[in-house]
Length: 295
Image 1 (cartoon, rainbow, N blue to C red):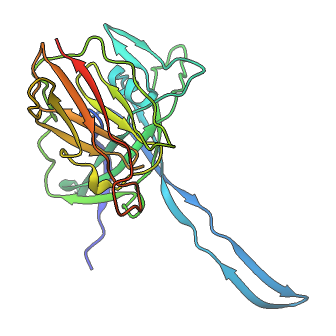
Image 2: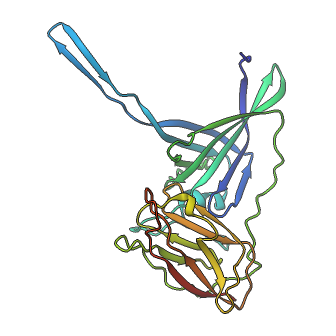
Image 3: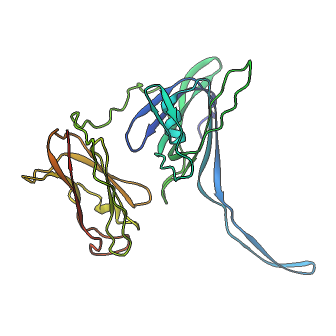
């Protein structure tokens, strides 16, 4: 058995937006509380007077973690990710009141130091995935520095570990993750998003101004079918396939295509072919195509 590890301090925090791959790395975090979120088990006892004849038990099951972070400084871009608002041209706007907030999920990694007496001999990296932020509290006090507090819930997919702890000899290089490039092309006037039809099993389609395409199904699909063959973007006139990456979220309902290179001044067609619903043996969804033009 290995010796116990003396862990102290927070030496680095990394947050990666799981949709855009944008990375935040900072060293000003002052605390992080990670508490398990449990589906409580039950205990039924068959007792007759002073005798217990049987106990039927079900165990607690971890469904994720509740995470609370505090930072010494306010980072507007991080606030926008957790709170679900926007930060543009020096102004932060919180999500609109009275409507559903579609917050991006993110992966959180906390690095602590391992000490041997006074020397740092290694690091421990605590990671939770698929965190989704909550609305922020603002606690301002005269004569005191504002300490931002960021709260979120981590919800791993079924069968996925809710937390990982990796022991490292050195800190990894703090290299930013560069999101895939679209070559500067944009879609200033995207087509109107459509909604998923549960009856025909037709996915809703959204074209982003950044050329990303998102298909949303009413029910889960087979994640093995989320491929660049089934979800693709092509040039409308010649049918040339655009290079890109396809991902599917943990609910198996949302598929996203991110182009790695796409030209301006071209009309493209985003297509989702018929795929298998979760549990189906043959393709049973309805294919759909949407055109959009870049500038």
